[in-house]
Length: 422
Image (cartoon, rainbow, N blue to C red):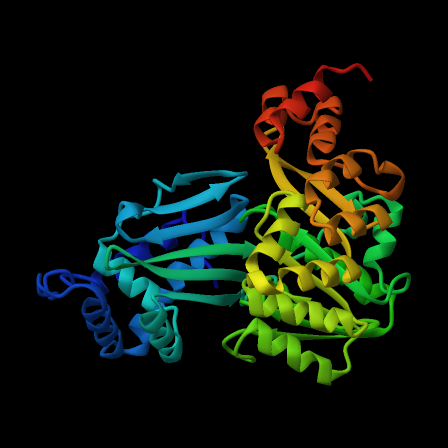
């Protein structure tokens, strides 16, 4: 059972935890640093009985559970920058949780290592970084399950951890407010092939949008969906589609391998968690070119930047061929941002590119600079620029004038739109 962090029961858990970690800092020689120190912390855990390790885990689980109570998207702790505190991002603002106790670097290392398996610890020490998922289950009264995406890494020889809460429910596809033409492009019943990209910076909600698209297809069409993620976040329950989840590092070696292997698994839709490198980009183009529907994400803030990033990631001597293939297989790009609203929450702002005949020609001819104006004038196809959508949110009085300008990609254009009369 999880304990809320503002109860007497939690205070007792804290006392037990402090007793377990008592004098651990004094037992670490001052000359022990970096990996050697982490190994020392790991040995400390290995010598600990299961009951004590359970106390450490219950403490972290209670903080993870508390994230949902305060509507936090992220939890951060550990490392020099963490200042011995636990930090949460609540409605877009990251701040320290001063009601939670402070822990030394060594104690934070132990709390993080206690979450990991032996194999995960080996990978963390080898790569100095580890992406993984966390699942906690409530025993009573509701038997709820919560999933989190986690990233552990080294910072100045100490361990740090970021944990992102995965929503227990999926945002309805209709609430994304895509144009009907764009919605059809994303639905396998209307279009059975092609590449569709959801892009945005870290924390922009692109994974949630992708899950909404997957969910819509799962409930509306008969087929086979293969999801390759690092790590697996939301787990889709098969409905009209059979949905497979393959986690990089656990079920498959890499995004590239998972993408290539998917061709032999009779898929209708292949979801690639992220186009991280040239090999994955080429593999995605290959499987799309073979007649499959492929969804993926990139860390870019606009449609034009996405095109330039894909082409720029490939070898110079391959860029011409990639441009032609991308023009042939790409169907849509949705670039999004989560912007703060006047009521202290966040709203989705998006730029949508639909690949028309004119857009195809611009990609092939390396004239991507012309595409922004095509988006601006392409409303009939379902296109919209980020600046147009921010203006819409401002006209609806959901965001302020300053917010619209701050989150725009093109400051001059947003000023012109905001100044114009409806």
